[in-house]
Length: 283
Image (cartoon, rainbow, N blue to C red; front, top):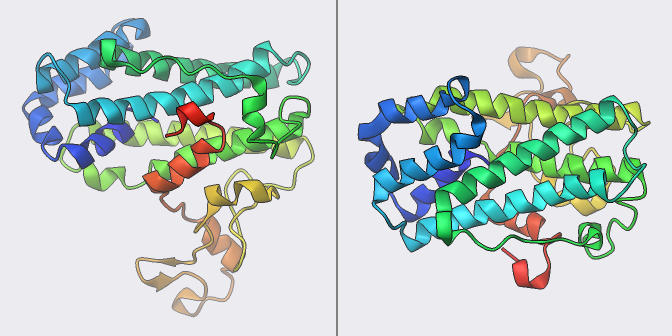
């Protein structure tokens, strides 16, 4: 979850969000490029200021709900990686693997702080997790004792995030934030690819990108995460069948599937996230 996803979700409950922000496009552009100018620790205050200018001192209830939904997902992801690093010694090999997971964990904490800064006193209470929560009710009993299982669950999280990001270009058409949105999206996709390459380095038959067949869209070999990959095995784009296009026979269905990522709607993301949330924290 990131600022672009947040704005899209807010638009569903406040159709005027972009009109509220549009007169301040220059200010928004400054906000998205501020990483080059100020300490990232100041980002939560900047995001909070942006929403204050758009709505006044009090955020609408629906907007608060949207931001808290995003915050719940960020707590989920941060705790998943943090438990692996802090509470499961020896799970992640030293060196490059530990460095990579640490970086991803720190990104998730930055997202948490950004959202808390925007919500202020309206931020939901921090969601705490036991390590057993990430077994998804026993579906992944070895998530913190088997490194490959851990990576496969991480792969599911990251691929979910990439798919949930789709469709933003249309929503943000005409806004200066579109360029930054595309920059963010490419980095998120690299995270997903890196996790997949970590899996491949540990014996999994998996590519850096999602692939599938005529009947199977989940290429992880873990049936429990089928929902993450539902609909990814399409070989038709914009009404055009990619296999056999222009009479060519060299494009297999697997290759055509690999060429495109499909969007994942909010309801599907909620279903996936709720597998790892305790009863009192369900989305």
